[in-house]
Image (cartoon, rainbow, N blue to C red):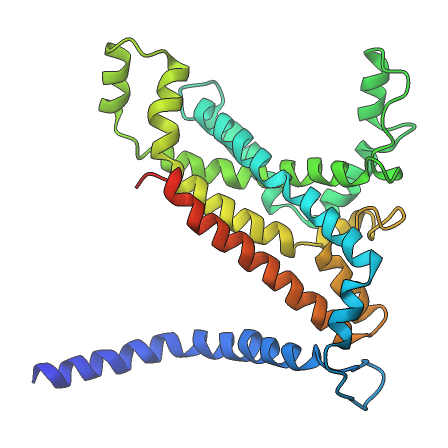
Length: 293
């Protein structure tokens, strides 16, 4: 009787996860396997013939100067993740206390995360406009005669994208930190206060270690999301000026859907997958030193 009940429960569980697993199979596993096959071919979208070329796409990628430009831009793009997490933690600590318009401020900080990427792109293009934009207007007003060109120059464009991404991710990271902060027992903070700990000491010695699992989660998901993202860059700069904002995900998109070189794009996509795996493994190994459960 008990065994038959367990079998029925197992069948019911498989029934519930079946649609989701079917979606994973159809939209993730099969396309990934097919892209692994395409990596060793010269398949072009407009050409029905597929020829096996071995490691030619990989050797081409390793000799492609633009690939290394995209890799460097991707690493610069990733700098936005820890900065956004640190700022989000500071904002969450402030908004976790009793402040005026607390709920309104929380909603305002989170609003960019649910805003359309096209709208974000349009607004920031206006803000970063080098001659008449409000940001450079403010910088000129405080005495900076030659403010940065932001999105219009190769030297500053990628850092301008970082600023936009920090602003975009700040609200989401803040909400997750707020949830973690509200789980910290008040008794710990009161005991630290009685022992004479200053507020910044309590944050450093108590709050930050207790939210380290949340920080670890945001770091992993943030890095993966940032590496894969190209929508905002495509909407704002399309990889320009002069490929200065072309990241690996955008480089894959351009080769696959602009130049129709599916085999080469597949090779780059697997290189991107390898980079994501390296970052993830590195974080899983390193988290033992600073994450406290």
